Amino acid sequence: IDALQHVHSHHLVHCDVKPANFLFERHQTGGIKLIDWGLAKLYRDPATLVHRPEGSISSLLGTRSFASINVHYHKCPSRRDDMESLAYTILLLLCGGLPWVVNGIKRVGVLREKLKWSGGALSIGNPAVFGDFLDYTRTLAFDEEPDYAGWRRRF
Image 1: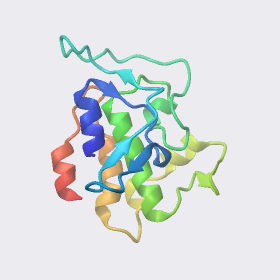
Image 2: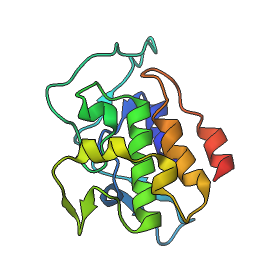
Image 3: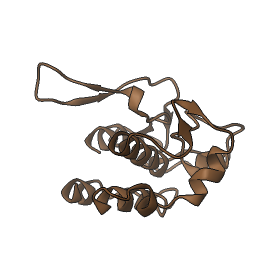
């Protein structure tokens, strides 16, 4: 959450949040670094801080298994989409997999599968906060600022 808040504070959305794009520092305080900025986009004007208008994109942006539902629908990415991708990343690491990922190979119908699964159903057997986080990210409006501090406290 800290990494994404930092990215978002610089008017950027990463657009490809997934486990492979996180690095853990070995020799410092155990910090986490977000890498691979090839798909990053400005979500607001750095000078005026005006949020980019909601629109569409021509194709799915990012990695299908971790892309938000809105990005599957070709909606322009915003902070909510990075947060939803983070929720999928956390759930994959916590649960050892996601229903739409089999042995690292993406199945056809990833969007259909995502629509069938709530956060609560995905996190069964684990603390409810992890499923709650996914459900929360799916309710965020396009230009809404995520509650970074609130979720840090809950985790």
